[in-house]
Image (cartoon, rainbow, N blue to C red; front, side, top):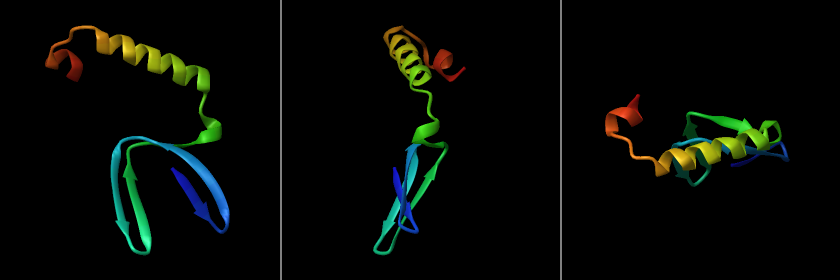
Length: 66
């Protein structure tokens, strides 16, 4: 997500949520927002690899919810 305020742009990584767009405003409701420069790329890549490995395993709905 790119936010421009007072002619200054900031890039954010955002989690899941909702967005509302009106003619004069965009509102974002999310469970997570981090400025791009504070994200640890190595840690993020490891998290993606763990998530991809977990998706390949067979899990019941109860195990996923736990």
